[in-house]
Amino acid sequence: MIRTRFAPSPTGYMHIGNLRTALYEFLIAKSQGGSFILRIEDTDQERFVEGATDVIYKTLEMAKMPHDEGPDVGGDYGPYIQSERKNDYLKYALELVDKGEAYYCFCTKERLDSLKNENGNETIVKYDRHCLSLSKEEIEENLKNNVPYVIRQKIKDGKTTFHDEVYGDITVDNSELEDQILIKSDGYPTYNFANVIDDHLMNITHVVRGAEYLSSTPKYNLLYEAFGWDIPVYVHLPAVMKDKHNKLSKRNGDASFQDLIEKGYLPDAIVNYIALLGWSPSVNQEIFTMDELIKIFDIKGLSKSPAIFDIEKLTWMNGEYIKKMDFDEFFSWVEPELKSAITRTDIDLKKVATYVKTRIGTSKDIANMVSFIDNLPEYSTELYIHKKMKTTEEMSLNNLKEILPVLESIEENNWNNETLYSKMVEKIQSMEIKNGQMLWPVRTALSGEPTSPCGASELAELLGKADTLNRINKGIELLSK
RNA sequence: GGCCCGUUGGUCAAGAGGUUAAGACACGGCCCUUUCACGGCUGAGACACGAGUUCGAUUCUCGUACGGGUCACCA
Image 1 (spheres, chains in turn green, yellow):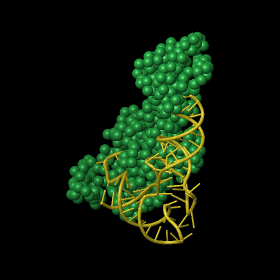
Image 2: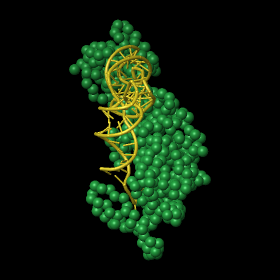
Image 3: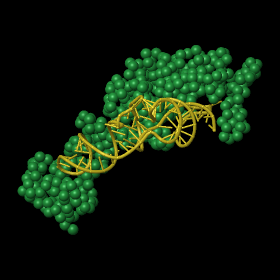
Image 4: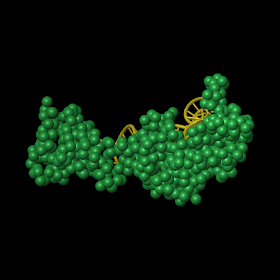
């Protein structure tokens, strides 16, 4: 059975690239009826951030990617938190030392630095294997005296070839590889080492991660071989870019999942969008539910080249999700936005919500769209000129004057969209003008905006009789100047 | 710099030796219409370059250019 794992380091932030990796790991497992496991990679004590694991749980939950095993839900194949198993890694490293596949290294930071400098500033140099030639006695002596040490992997000669599901076969000459550190002097394993151990222990069948690990994969294979363990299936993913040259990163303040949620995006839309960033389905379709994704996902659709994160397309997709949303759900989602944008208490917020629902990309679009309700903005009479409606300022002034008594005559208890519309059309017909020639000026007078979430009669209904008459009068006044 | 990887419209991308080189976002136009939006129709816009293989290359090979990754006691 397929087992994949999501192995984030808890830095308190889940960026889009991370989430996409998790998504593909989830989909690879679930599309084959496998398990998706969460492992927290906290071997770097310096970068640990309090509460960061909660961000991870929360994000996976919102994104609807439940993990089958993990620190919070347990499972049969721990470890789910690396720092809790510090000593086990050492045990495995020592096993390699015994086998002659790894060795103690007592070199100081200073010596390593000097190695690099000796060779000029441009040349990058590998570790010179100084400690490989230490005698058994020297090692014993150093250990007895508590000289700080690391354990290094001994890279053998030859070439290493590995297969990646996305990139195919890749061969590297082992001379390119360094005797990498397995156990750090603080006793913690390095990421690369802990990864191999844990993936093996957890029976991970598919190792899915960013393409930046492509170049360290040969070292992984050598490690698996040294232990005599099965090599997992590798799936390397191209990066998610912010633009042509830069990856999406938190350092640049690029959008994280949390940021996008705060900006008014829906979790489902975000997940749907990132599924398509670097993967394409076998069918010509873009909107997918998670269940549909699970059904149709195939590693074959993964792309090799980096993809630029396009917030505009995400916004479009978010709009599609909003349109499809159940109204009550939509309303409770945007109610806070509406309430902070509209402080008047006589406004039917549900009506506003229906008008706004088909025309927003994110919930944050609402505020601007409805701000005219609280306060009629200052506007230029040029707004009354509309080419398609064939309106002019003079005509608008005249038509507003004509419609005013009609509106005044409508009783408060008949003040609704249907009545308003039919009364206005009645008047329009008697004047023998086009609908737009009356409705456009009215819409303009009521909103003071070039665009509004609904038309003249809906606006009048929303604003109520008193305010409607008031705004029409203001329009007349403005146009009279 | 060494090594590894990549390159189809502005963006996401399908395709794969012979196609009018899909589709989506964004953009332009038209229709619908009570503005905008929605919806419908439509337009413009791409195979990085050079050799080779082939009857035929966007597709295969090799170079070049450009881009990315990596070369940590970070993950």
